[in-house]
Image 1: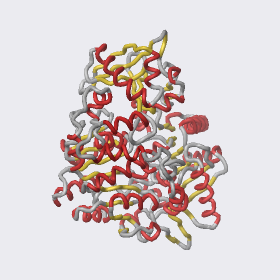
Image 2: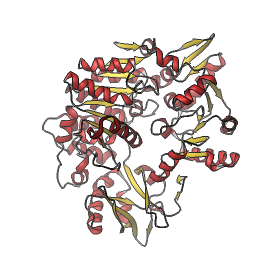
Image 3: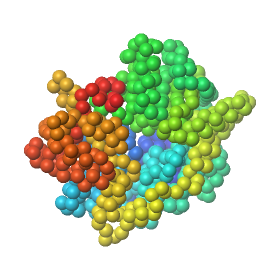
Image 4: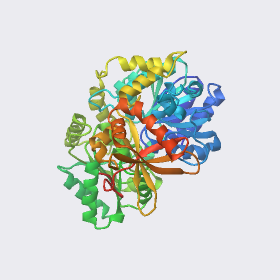
Length: 578
């Protein structure tokens, strides 16, 4: 069966053929992302669009999806993200038939900040050819995938990405752009918000979960084949502390079962990794994956995952990494995150067969304070209440079920009872200014990059509370440099100039040219100027493009990016930025 040959995808295609927008709710591992070729085919056949733009929250997901589409569609596929994937498939203006993009890049192009010309636009040299990518967007089907990550239903304050999605959905649907919003774990209060902004129909792959969502026009689609394949006897265990939970996981690893360990913070993941390596005595059997690994270390970790007995990760595993395990040991988190983590179990045919004969196990230990706060503590308490009543938790299917006189409460019930309630009544902590400027940036017929530039100066981004900065990590022994993308706020938290390779009033930077043949050089820039540029959103947006332009000229490299070098000792190979 091809990934898109499923009843749920058929229903989405049918609605698209009728020029309707769709909210597609389906379990983890259902193949939502892999349905894009079918969506493109149906839109083209119906005459409503001849291209599709697939928007994802993480660069790692963009890379995975691009190679999938490249295999299915050949040179018709392209990508837009801060990646170098080889060939000439970078599509800055989004004019390919199928373009995979990060939410950051999509938001900039939609708001008239041309990604392909961003440095010149932000520095005021010119306004860029912003209507080219906008023309592509407004004549495409837009797929917003992993939409729960944009919405962040667990957030204490309403995230910028959720506010952006509100405005973008209103603008796109008002312009009759066909939309497909895909999710597995978004609560009904936020689903209703998407429906109100778009008028979309909801397609949910379940028997009766539409009653739970209570959404008008929600259509449940029964997929008997998928349901039978994933009729698993999930076991959930609550441990009193982290060490007990890790020891439980290790006992299963020793029996030959593949174990995934997930912590809520990088520090927690490193601690768990070091504890497990000390217990098992063989580092080759354990692999560590998190968001502060450089690209080379990340690639090595992804390769090592294929043979590792234990995989230790942060929440980056929820969407950005393709992993397959049988046992999950996890710090308590928001219910949607717990469901995404459990969704990494029993994915391949081989592992699914093992899970059918020996049930998958989810071990949860009490959470720390970050980053989920009260949502994680409530999830732990609610899971305990369910288990104490003699029921179990269904971590894959959207329906509550009964098997052999045992009640299985779907993870969707946890999401609804905790995140659905918490998301209600949340208002923006930024006031109406963001929404007004965002609407002007996206919707006005005779607009300019001005409103979007003001937003970026205030928030560093249109969709997140901080900017993204690429750092260069010296490899030593003439092996060049690895690259780590991190946040402006993390650089500030980790000490700013203490993190960077600065000495005698100057900081080392790597000037790296774009193109198929890498061109790079290390030069020095004034320390005070670089540190100030990384000290706030406004300074970063206004000053950094000038630093890039001047450094590129000095190095003699055109079309370059500039990456500050990390101070030796601040990055540990295989462990990450510390």
